[in-house]
Length: 342
Image (cartoon, rainbow, N blue to C red; front, side, top):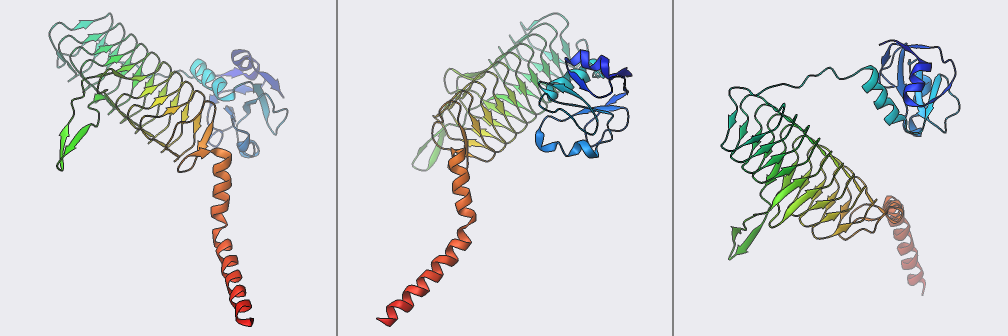
C-alpha cells in the first residue's frame, strides 16, 4: 500500500488540514502507528493521543480544525477509517469452497449455488442452505433449519431445528441458536420441564459474536431484527424480540418475553428482566439492571436502573456516605451533650 493523503481524502470524502502530498504506506491504531501510517480518532477524549502518536496523518471528526499532525476531517472518523482499511488493506482471508467428503448431509437437503461446507459439518434432513453460504468445520444444522444467502457460520456453531437465518448473517464460533428456553414448572419441589416448541428467526445483516446463546421460544419465535449486532457471551432468552439495528454488548443478558426496540444499545454486563419493553433508541449503561420498562430515547444506568441523570446523583450521594455518617455521628454527640445540660 502506498498512496498520497490527497488520494485518501477523495476515497473517504474528507477535508485535509495540512500537507496533502504526504505518502501513506500503512494503516494502524493511534498507539501502534509509525511514520508513514494513517490512523484515526473517533472520540474527543482521546485527542491528547494526537501529540504522542508517530502516525503521519490522522482521520478526525469534522469539528477538529488543527493538530500537531496533518488531519483529514470527516463526519464519521471510525466509519471512514473502516472504509479506508477495506479499500487499501483488504482482508486476505479466503473462505473455503466446495463440500468436504466428511460432511454429513441428510435427506432432502436443499443446497444453493456455491455453498461451502467444511469437514465434519452435520446438516440434518430437510435443511436449506442458500447461495454462497459458508459453513466451517463442526457446524451443526438441525432439521428444517434455513440459512440465507452469503452467510458465514464459523466453527462449532449449533443451529437447532426449524431455526431461520436470514441473508448476510455472520455467526462466530461456539454460539448456539435455538437451544431450549429455560422453562420449568415446580410441583412439590420437583422441576418439570415445559416443552419449548417455538423457534428463532435471525433477520438479514445480523452479526452474532462467539459463545452467544439465543433460546427458542416456548411458542412462536424469538426474533433478532435486521442489522442488529451482538457481541460475545450474550444470553438472549425465549420469546425475546430485538428490533432492527440494535447493539448488545458482551455479557449482557435479556430475560424471556422482553421486547427490545429499534436502535437500542445494551452495554456490557447489563441485565434486563422479563416481560418488559425497552423503547426505541434507548441506552442501557454497562452493568445496569433494568427491572421495569424504559421509554423510548432514554438512557438508564445503575441498579435498579434509573434515568442516567438521576442515577448519577444517587451515586454521588453514595460516594459521600462516609462523610455524611461522620457528620451524623458528630450531630448525635452534640445532641447528647445538650440533653445532659438540661
